[in-house]
Every structure is written in structure tokens, then in C-alpha cells.
Length: 388
Ligand code: HEM
Image 1 (cartoon, rainbow, N blue to C red):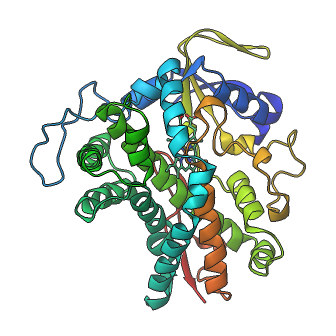
Image 2: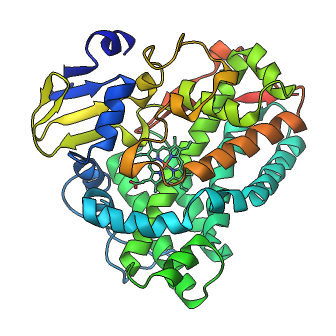
Image 3: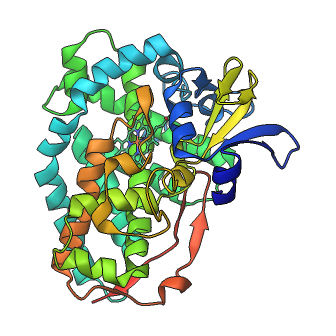
């Protein structure tokens, strides 16, 4: 990646299938691709659940067939089409923003403390991936949507299926169908009983988001806000354990946690992630390279965050230089991560409280021996066994 970034930042590559594609690795070019609506997100999203062109069957949370239509999970209504996306973002931006995320900070802090209580009570070594990183974002989503108790098992089952990693597309589709059933129930429940949560706000503030759009929004936020946070937290912790001097600076208060989180987002990204693949809708010229219409374009926000034209010595993990402008971990342009403010709150509260609770926290195996796994979207520690 580093070599390509220097010599050929927009490179023509060949996929294992033999099909041609493009790989974009520099900060400047990745930003251009992410911000330019001529690069569409549609085909990859459309295939996410229905690879064979068929739709997976819907399901309800009690196991009975749902009367709701089968999941429409291509987000086509509001993600792929520019005008629909703009309308959807104008609604969702009102409910999901920095103010709303900051309003959740106290609750997120409480959820972190509860999970740390669980870690403290558990036999050591404790696996931080299992007991902390994967549990926090799901609990935050419960709080975000104010999910009633009876619907939580369906979300938990979906989360478990996602964690099963190398699951087949069929298993992925089945898990999404389960999530769809729960989202349908949640929207129905909330329509009957509006509260203060963002979903209620979206229902209350505008009559023009249909039930189907609200259901898709719940699904999108759940998918986008679960594993991303868990893997980012896990990879960030691993990077800290790999750099003990930086870990010490963080726990001694020598560097602010918000800076640390930005450097973690730059240096310890989870992989190609959510924004990995786009398609050109027409011929697009990126500097001197003409990317033809219909081309598959892979971007690497990870490589972009290590661009020496953007910041010096990019392979060095240095918490104090953390800045949002150094990375593209949350994307760029119209599709910039809707949950970025909340993700930042989660990561900041998680790291700050973990360090404060366990000043002697240390990894049990050598950092180099931590097993790493990759799934469809992310690369993450399989486990992080710690003691204190
Ligand atoms: C560290 C955690 C996270 C990372 C690294 C991350 C990364 C990203 C990236 C790169 C995109 C852009 C995708 C594109 O250009 O197509 C994105 C979009 C999005 N993210 Fe996040 N995300 C995180 C957490 C969250 C959370 C917590 C939520 C909500 C609860 C969320 C909700 C969304 C949504 C709804 C979009 C689609 C926005 C749009 O297309 O307009 N994300 N995220």
C-alpha cells in the first residue's frame, strides 16, 4: 500500500477473479473518491443481503413469519441516490449530531462503568474484546433507540451472528432478516409511544420519512454503529499495548483522550471497513488516470491515514499529534459518518474510564502474539486477554 501510494496512488489492479478494478491509496485521492457522487455506493450495498438477486425472507422477533415486507437493505432509497440521500441526511442530521452525542456522554459513561464492573468481577485474565469492546456499542445502541427489553434479544442475536465472522452470505442474510424484524417492531412500538430518543425525534419532526425508511435507518445505524466501534476500540487498545510509552502517557494524563482517539482512528483502523468499495457511474478522471464507467474502485482509508504528504513520519504512533484532519476513518463528503460524534464519545469514555479504573492494566500475552482475525469488513484482535 505504501509503495502504491507513493508511485501510483490510483492504481489499476486485478481481482482474484481476473476482473479489473482500481485501488486508491493516497489521502488526497481517497478524499476525492469519497466526496464525489460520481462514485456510487449502490451495487455493493444492494448485494449486501441479497447476493443471488433474491430477497431474504422477513422474520419477526417471536419466530413467526413477519407480515412486513422482506428486508430492503440496499439503502437505495436514501444512500445511493443523491437527492434522496440529501433529504434523508437533512432529517437524520437533526437527530444525530454533536449536540445529541454529547447529551449521551453521561449515559455512555455509565454503560462503560457497568461493563468495567463486570470485568472486575470476572476471573482473570479478562478478554476485553468479549467483555468490553463488543458489549459497549450494542448497549449504546439500546440507549440510543431506547430499545424496549422484549426486543433486545433479537438485536443481541443479530450481534452474535455478526461476530461469528466468516459467516456465509446466506447466514449474513438470515441475521439481517432477524434484525429487520426487530427494527419493524421497534418502529411500530415507537410510533405508539414517542419519547425523547432520536428515533422519536425523526418520527415527530417530519412526517415524510416512511416506516420503511425509518426501519432502514434503524438497521443502517445498527450495522454501522456496532462492529465499527468494537473493532476500533479493540485495535486501539492493541496499538496502545504495542506502544507502552504511549499507553503510559495516556494513563498518566500526559495526553488528552480526545487527541489519543484521533490518533487511534488514524493509525489503528480496522480495515477497508464500511467505505471500502465504490463504483463509477461515468468515466471519471483522477489527475491523469481515467477510471472508466462501471469500474469497481477500492479505497484504503487506512493507507490514506499514513500518507507522508499529509503528515510526517506516518508510521509512528504518536498520541499527542492526534487530529481529525489527519485521517479519513469516518469518510468524507456527503456520506461522512453520521455516527462520528457518538463513536468519538464512546471511544473517549471507554479509554478514559478503562485507564482510570485499572491503572495497572496489562496484556497477558506478548502484544505480538495477540491473534488477529479478519471478517468481511474488519480486521481485529480475536481476543485481548488482560489483567491488572
Ligand atoms: C469508530 C467507529 C466508526 C467508524 C470507523 C465509522 C466509519 C464510517 C465511514 C468510513 C463511513 C462512510 C461510508 C461511505 O462513505 O459510504 C460511515 C458512514 C456511516 N456511519 Fe459510521 N463509523 C463508525 C461509527 C458509527 C456509529 C457509532 C454510527 C451510528 C450509531 C455510524 C453510522 C453511520 C451511518 C448512518 C453512515 C452512513 C452515512 C451516509 O451514507 O450518509 N457510524 N461510517
